[in-house]
Length: 297
Image 1 (spheres, rainbow, N blue to C red):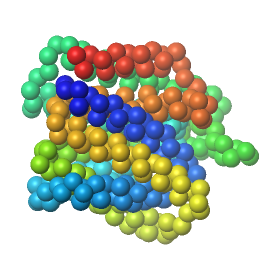
Image 2: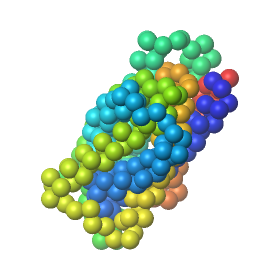
Image 3: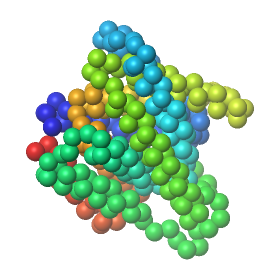
Image 4: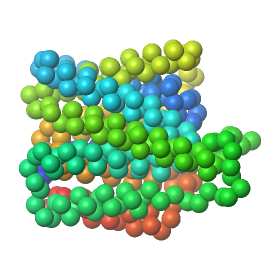
């Protein structure tokens, strides 16, 4: 892996990890559908000018793969934002990221060049770290009933049924995103950011249609728009660096590298939302970082 691809991957990890946390916060405060709409519109507003400035080639190849990816991405986003409304922000993000990485990695190992032994160990360590990271703090046995219970101070009490629902939605979201990554992986440097433009425009359109179908409006207060802008900008930066890394790197390696984004989400959730982390989750971060180093070797 070249230094350039490695740096792009690191930026993606940080940006996606941070956007994952704030997406969970926004989803709980303004709703999954409004969060999706606001962030996708922001994403388009960031990526479209970049593609125009770079003078990327607008071809059927670049647009087509972006649109195909958007079909799976749109469904994945709705599942992801619904998941964080029902479960712990850190846990749902890790589940989604782990499956999202596993799907393209498996396809890349079968269809693409086989990585050397050290990188295979690195991939295995990163995926193992997701298993350790996904272990949640316990839910009390008496917490049953509705998925999420609102407390008087505006916080949320997680219930066992809600956590199970969140986990299922996260797994589904990760699989859908993974298929979308495979589609984006078919693009080349010549396509530039055009696939991302078609990807984000399509998702924003679908999100708005779903919002209106539920008779909701994209009417947010200043705080809501700020959250949407933060998530959208962070996600857009991560999307750009990820696509550039994917176009230059291997499908079996780049997704493994960026799978560590949930570690950033978990750390933010721990210190900003006071979500508990088990010792195994700390070990998971250490294992993941070790795997990341091996991927660079």
